[in-house]
Image: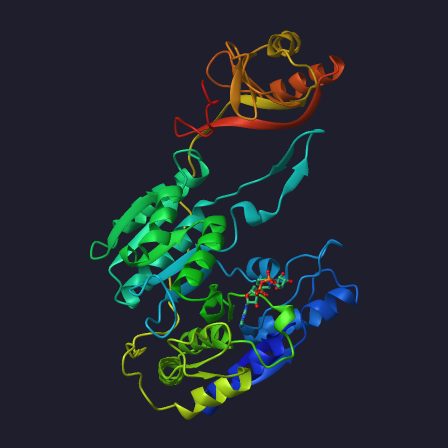
Length: 478
Ligand code: NAD
C-alpha cells in the first residue's frame, strides 16, 4: 500500500479525478489516499500561493502527489502553484509522452510516439524580472550545470529503461552561447556515456519545425524549460488532443503527476471532460511507485476503450468514433475493459518500468575565476552614443577603461550604425587595462564616480574568465 496525496483542483478537476481514481482502484491499485485542497478557493481565501502550509506537510510526507488541474485567478499577484510545487519539491524532470492513437483519434501524424523531457526548475522560469528603465524590462535566464546534468542524464536513463533508440536535444545556442551553450555542451558530454543510444542536437527553430512536420523522426527529446513547455503542448496537440496527455514531474525525493491540460472551466460540472490526461498521469504514477502490473492493466484497458470508439466530445469524430460518452461513462467503459488488450493499437508492457534512480550530482573542481571587467547598465535618454561614451570615459578609474557600449545587445560604440534603433537602456563595458582586475575596489570606485557624474546606473554585471575562457558574451557586431 502506498500513501499518496491527491488534490481535485478546479473546473473539470473533480470530475476527472473521480473518474481516474475509480479506474485505478478498480484495476487493483494499492494506494491509500489523503486529499488536500489547492487552487481557486484557497487563492480566493487570501492565500496567494494557492495552498495551505499544512498541505505542504502532507505532500512532503507522502512524497507522491496526483494533482488535477487548478485555476489560477487572473491578476492580483497570485503565484502559479504548479511552478512553485515543482521548484519547492525539486521536481526537476517533466516527462510528457505524446503518442498518436491512429486511426481512432484524428491526427496528421499516425506514427508519432515521442517523449518530451523538459527541464522543470530553471531557465526563464526563475521568474526574476525587473523594470530597469522607462522603456525596458528584463527577465533573468538562469541555467545551471547541475540542472543540465540532471535533466540530460534523466533523458538518457529514461531512453535506456524504455528501450528507446535516440535522444534529441533542442537549444538556441547559436544565440545564447553561455546559457543554452551550457545545456548543449552538457548534452554532448553525457551522451558519450551512452554509446548505444543515438544522439543529436537541433537548433530549436528548425527542430520545432521538424517536430511539427515529421514527429515520427523523433524519439526522446530533452530541452530547457521554456522550449519544453511550448513544444510539449504542441506535441500533445498534434498527436491528437491536449486532453489525452499526462505528465510526470520527477524529483529525487518527491514526484507529482497530472494532466497537461488546464481546468477548462467552461466544461466544468457537465460530465463532459475527457479524464484521459489525468489517467495517463496516474499510469505514470503507478509505474513510479512500482505497481507496474496495475499500470499496464489500466493503460491497455484505456487503449481498448479508445479503440472501441467510446469517446468523449473532444475526440469524437463521426468517421472514427462509435459512442459519444461523458466523463463517468468513459470511466465505466475503461473499467469494463480491465483485463482486456487492444487489438489494433499496440498493447503496452511496463515490466521494466519503475522509478529511475540516478546518481547524485557531483560538484566538479572549481574553475580558476578571474575578474576582467564590469558591465555598467545605465538609464540614459540621449540619442548619441558618442556623447554617452564621453560621459562614461569621464568616470574611468585607474586600471579600467571603457571598451564598448551596446543598446539591447548591439554594439553602438565605437563605430555604431546610425540606423540602429536606440532605447534608454545602455550597457557600458569596462575592461581591465592590464588583463585582469586584482582589486574589486576598482568597481566600487567606478560606481562612486558614476554617481558623482550623475550617471543613472541600474545594475552592474562583473565580467569573469573561467579557466581562461570568457564567461560573458561579446557585444553583437563586436
Ligand atoms: P485548458 O487546458 O483548461 O483548456 C483549453 C481547451 O481544451 C478548452 O477549450 C477545453 O475545452 C479543452 N480541454 C482541456 N482539457 C480537456 C479535457 N480533459 N476534456 C475535454 N476538453 C478539454 O486551458 P485554458 O482554458 O487556457 O486554462 C484554464 C485554466 O486552467 C486557467 O486558469 C489556467 O491557469 C489553468 N491551467 C492549469 C494547469 C494545471 O493546473 N496544470 C495547466 C494549464 C492551465
